[in-house]
Image 1 (cartoon, rainbow, N blue to C red):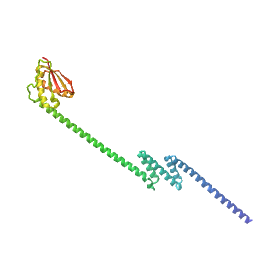
Image 2: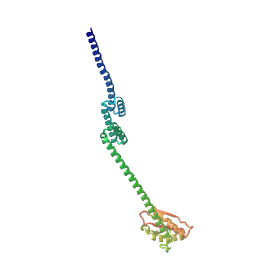
Image 3: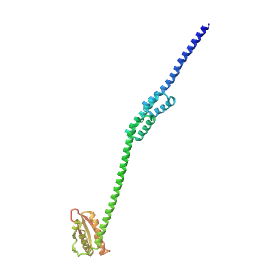
Image 4: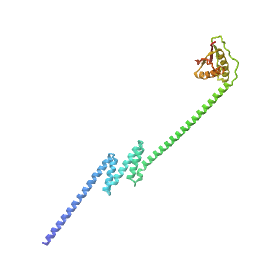
Length: 275
């Protein structure tokens, strides 16, 4: 009787033990299946290039299963994905995005600095190139500004010299002695011609002496004056010189003056007496 009861208790204990053994793996399998789904979502985020989403999923898994051996592998994959993103950004010239991706990769794999050395060196080289280009541009701008300032100073110097030459010419004209009429005109003729070869020869002193004589003729005979020149600039220079001499002789007399352009002929004056 006692032996039978002992056998029954032994069988019952064995059954409970088997039941416990069967229930334990079932609960562990449920936990494994749940993590497997999260890891698959993480893989999908990595595969589709959604790195921010993948990083968020990785952080959740690290909080709930920090000892899972698979985390390190996915962490490395995410770091490598960020490095690829940084290399692509660097190739397209987006230096800021490349640097940001490099920083994210370094945060994910701080224990493996060699992993990010290549991209970090490339970014540093590009930055150095940009700095050197900026320095060259700044130097070029400074040189251009210095050259422009030097050009302005030279222009001012040339203008000053031209003003001095002009003042000297006027002074020489004012003090030039009055010469006898070099080429007296015929008051009875409709007009008289006086050649001005010294205008072509740039013989200013000879020209000034001739204009002194012409001014006296114009005043005496009340002539109108036609100034024949090769270019307008010569007329604009010659007419005031003759007019100034006429006004010195008779301030109230202002003869009619006109311009004749004859580029192929020697400059000359055409004087027409009015009395």
